[in-house]
Image (tube, rainbow, N blue to C red; front, side, top):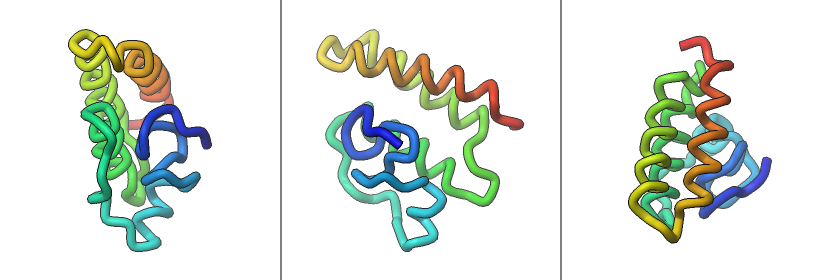
Length: 98
């Protein structure tokens, strides 16, 4: 329930609002709103993947963690926040069933 970066990165932070990805989708959200950069777009893709009935999956978490880690390695401006996201989502993936 906190924005970490941009409009899409953070627990229950979807399209600049304090709302779960599932609730966003149920309210008509289409995951097409702009992102501020590549990291924010990776978070948007993760939110979209987590918006189904089953919620987030370990696979979706690993994909975001890998993208965030790549951004941390290649974009000095986003290095710190990307590392935070990569680490946080990697930990969260251990709580997922699939």
